[in-house]
Length: 130
Image (tube, rainbow, N blue to C red; front, side, top):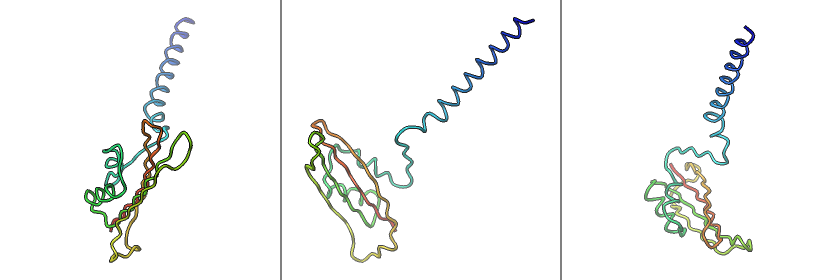
């Protein structure tokens, strides 16, 4: 009788461990990463990742063409990762004069990418919708 109790308790303990691991790795672990991306509406990050390098003017007009936004501001800064200095900055804005900025809903997106030659490109994109 004592050996049956040991076998049953070992079975229950292993079942409890398996259940704990299942809950941990299917519900908790995937949400503990550094980035959790939820996209509502237009996918600006997909547009940004289509090319390895953008200049501000091309990116602004591409976003305006694909999303139908009324306001687009793009700021691109390139940093040398070895020295830490700014290599290049590029700004461009599409802001029609006839819109009231109080009526525009502006979303801000941040994106960064590194190149093989140790340059970090940071993109700050503001997109405004009516």
